[in-house]
Amino acid sequence: MSKVVLITGGSSGIGKSIGEFLTEKGYTVFGTSRNPDKYKNSKFKLVALDVADFLSIQNAVKTVIDTAGHLDILINNAGAGITGAIEEIPDAEIKRNFETNFFGPINVIKAVLPQMRKQNSGLIINVTSIAGYMGLPYRGIYSASKGALELVTEAFRMEIKGFNIDMTNVAPGDFATNIASGRYHAPVLDDSPYKIPYGNTMKLMDSHVDSGKDPLLMAKAVYKIINTKKPKAHYKVGEFLQKFSIVLKRILPDKVYEKMLMNHYKL
Image (cartoon, rainbow, N blue to C red):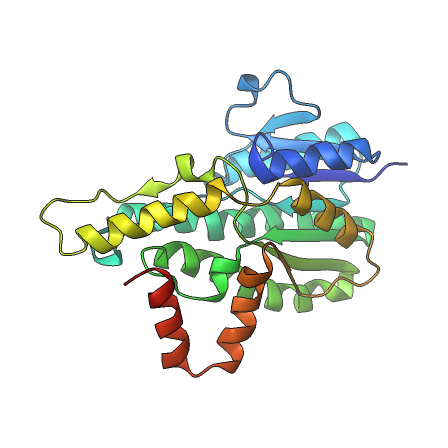
């Protein structure tokens, strides 16, 4: 009996790559999209789900279980980018980002746990970000929402271990996806004191995505985790320097690390 996988945000980018790769490996894959009818050529089934709507989440999970009879793996991949000087990002956009990147994944986990407990087995993989390990200039809200999910996972995995359910984080670096087009960008205001540094940082961020790694690398990493008997709490996938930046944060004095980041972003 093939394992059943639910991937949030499965219509494009990393989620799509993971879904296609696991489908080729014989898994029964369900992806999600707010508008699944837009993706008629998907290589795996897409169900409607909006991570900001708990009823939508419950209905999607029920659809998967009713269709497949069980649910073995959840990949919490749906997420949204956000950029801007924190002072200038509207509160509503900050809250919306946390709804997508933090509260949404938690609610999807809550929806699948009863079934996984019933089965006495399950694996939950939360896709976070290397940006969640550090406060990045003009990406502070994104860093905070992904970092919060990293920490919640650490606590959550201990709480559910007694039910034979595993949970882990996978933090990607920059990948060649359409995430930049889907970000909320606080506008670069002509009268803003942040106009020049924020504008320059945005160009740098977009160039990183454009030259990023192939999302297939994430798909292969997820496949390896699925086939790991006892997954670790944290995995990082991406360029060596991006992963190494996390190590540097642990060993360098705070001010030295901060200076290194400011030099990188030319601030």
